[in-house]
Length: 335
Image (tube, helix red, strand yellow):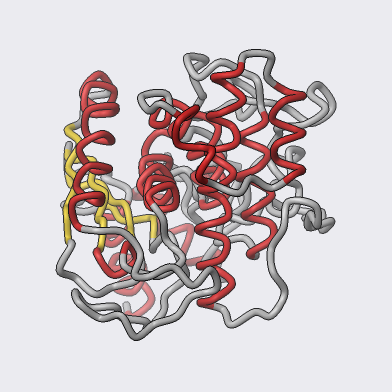
């Protein structure tokens, strides 16, 4: 009887978590743009010194202008998919992070002010943070895996990073006069060379170089937060190749590589990404020389991470057998 009660309790949890026989009020699969951390930067706090030694991140006006543009770019896109985009503007919150979640039909991104005030964050960096969170909603495959399969709406961390520079920031920066903005910036020589090699149009080259500044901004934030001494750089790529896709936050250099790769992919912004086929709308290793998802977090064959697929994820087949009587559609119930 105790075993039966335990199985029924687990089954009840599954029905809520997967939306079987009901609807979960909140589905939050993105824990944050950054791993959990204790850093706080309240409004008016100028005590923190980042790796790039900016004054104090961005202003509230700059922050709001970024959120306005993201809302304009993606409200109709989300609406077309049956959702409503909700940007929680949490400027006064000292949290150094951001997150995404779905609440019914509300597709939410939580944009905390603490991260925007970090000295390493520029306008370009904050735009990337917002684009990353949109990437959890719109970035397609690979999705965050669940041991119970199904119900995973969110693109994984590396995929959200890739979407940010492959799609979102290109549209975001296309609205600016980048030819006027870039002369005040120091562009990495490799980024400048590769952007020119990948794009014939000067406007596309400028957007590509502007994205490189986004990548530097957030990568220096990662370095500061993890107290690393080695500076992430475009010409020192992470040579790790994972055996299985990592759904969690990749390492600092790996994330920079992903941003750089997305910025160099010449596939049109209008080419739609797929929730099931990672090749659609993106660059692919073996077909494209550059611009594909970094192998330091992504394994194209087999696609995705997680567990399940016919094996009981609870470590007790008898419990799974009881659960499968109630929910035969679960992937580990198939024989």
